[in-house]
Image 1 (tube, rainbow, N blue to C red):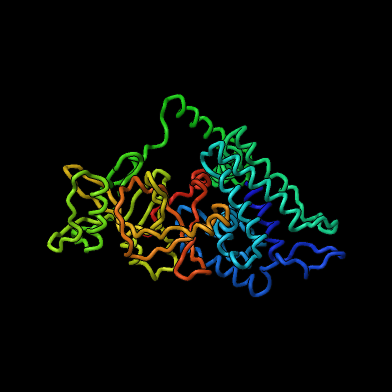
Image 2: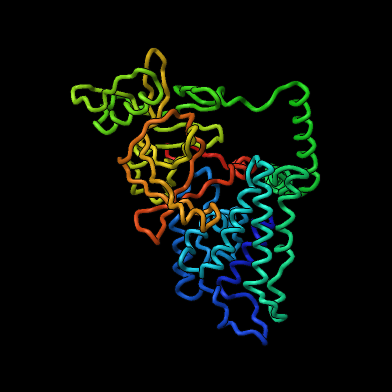
Length: 427
């Protein structure tokens, strides 16, 4: 938690902002990596704050203006999102290429070990990337100068231990302090006797342990997702569900939507006759506004969120990751709907799919920077809601107007441990 959420980000940011201690024998004017200084740093912080609207509520605490708040209790969760989510895209063509690629190696390696589940091949990739980052860090920044030895904090070396430790004892979510920090916060919030807080805290901890033991022995546990969906929700199976609001009046699909539906049917069902180009064919559906995913994230829609476009508090949750057998892609959900096809009711999503990623940039960034263009209402496709893997953030990529880069929620590990689930804001 503290290694990736505080220590390493703080060290790198001190270098990029030129606030690291400069020895008398060193010359700060030779620090070509110090690109976040003066007005650039101020503008950078403002851009970080503007990104709040693109972060779904399930991403927990959105980073504040780092230029103003970095010394005012900037949280580990904010550092995670800022450093391992925002920064690679924000510093592209700002940071010199050799330093930017070195940063991407760090980001990719840490993203892998923050996953909920990880394969041996991924751990090997993470180890190679983090080891390369540590070696290049000394070559690029220290340059064998004794006056820069203070650049090499212990946290830099500790990074290479993350993949082997993950292989030895499991994913970082079992090692990091997110769970105990949450427990401390919960128990602390329950204290009702400030005159004797430690005794009160001990008793509440004991009571919680007893309750947990009873639940384990009796087989009781938290409510199943299907039992807490609420009135009117549709359980779609496999921990997916359609959630209210639902449109009361049937919506008539346009020609491009009918074409997308037709393509889905032709791909899914044998001997299906196309109806997308038939101007006389009317397809009406009742639109749904939200879907609950197995990650406990709530995906929303352009249909509903566009009605609150002027709200400063809105946090976009309609961008999703779609995984099918042959590809992974990202897009903007227009709406969810149900349709009976050949006697079977299907739970579907109408999505404006993003363009294919920039392959060159994807490789240069070591699979960190997925840049895509999503145009609302265009490149429509229909998919089953079970093809939606997660809700993601698409952040504006200022180097290419109209394009965005993807920020995924670290396998949703941290949000599960911190109970930062979507709270139904705005519904």
